[in-house]
Image (cartoon, rainbow, N blue to C red; front, side, top):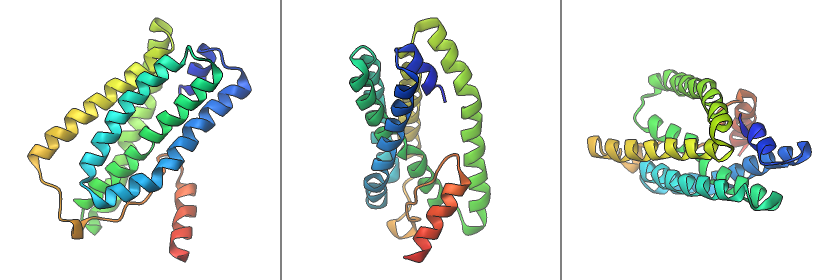
Length: 192
């Protein structure tokens, strides 16, 4: 949500900001199937831990790319989307592995609620950091969040083993913000 402010702060024009945001979304869309395949084959916690490690690296690359011109910023945005977009879907699939059929509606509501809390608080915090420390502060904040996610994942792996592969729910891309897109994707899956 703070992407347009970041784009403006690094000197992108209005049409370039649109391409910057599109690069992020395109990178995220390209990552869904390979990350879904990995999440269906390996412990999902390891998948999102490694995605978070990659997200920290892509945040650092994006901070450095702010000085490398428009093409560098666009490529960094695509890489950033590639590493960050699938994390919600992988985490959602992992949470559903532990939920019964009766608990899945409440689980989905809880996941969306916590996403909404972050979507409310993060733009204010990120824009304040950008105002105080410059555009790279946005990606420093995101990198810090992913470091917390890595520590949380490693801690939870010690507390509870992964469920058996036969008990896993199938990975499905879970759009974080649009129920319409989710319904359209569901219709496409049901026709197969």
